[in-house]
Length: 341
Image (cartoon, rainbow, N blue to C red):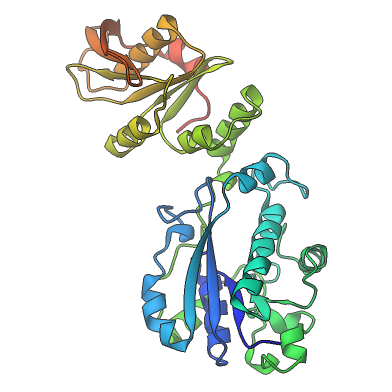
């Protein structure tokens, strides 16, 4: 077996420590960071967005390299129809792990690695990190004995790299459960000063985001990346089954909404007051655009909400039109709201 490992690197502390445990045995590690349309990306607020460049600089001399892999449409289809079911929200944790390990298996062949490494901790997560689940996933992927989980290895059956003497089992660990004390001690010993927050950044575990995704696929079962990207920003309203209105909550979201707008969408903003950028997507006409303008006025810095204000309405790439509107009332926009946010 080759003395080279491929590791799944989420950006979280556990996966970092698992990598270091293997590097300390003189084994080069090629880590792969996966990107999805559901919040696991370099700009995520969770551990998925944690900058690992300092680790590359610090551990690079030990044989540590990182590659990026976007799972794209394949991941969307998996989330739409997970084989192993979901957690409390829209999170298909087991299917997610299966897909990532499957891609990592392909990378093993590309870089000439002999085994896989993950930062999984036994019994840390009830759905995807149990002894039986580990066995099932490894078996289904044809990876029995190939996936080493260094942080809990002494509590699990020996893997092939351990049996063949590539990895010294005595230098692996026996961590179990949700506690973090030992991980923090290890991080301090290895100079990891920036500890990522435990939350991974996966939006599929968020109740509000999950409600938006369910609503999207309920009304458009084939909706893909262009609509999914819009779910993470703004306040969402559904005036009809085929139409969605998204209203920005801050300057950053306003820019994102404008950037996400595509041909056929309508953009709405106020002419004389600071306020949201709003996009109307799907089947819509003047009535929906007028409603969007009134909702935009509701969230703008308009001192008197009974005052008539001017809104700029324009189809993407079209000629802007000025209309007059009054801020919508709670009774008008409240029933149209899709999840709070």
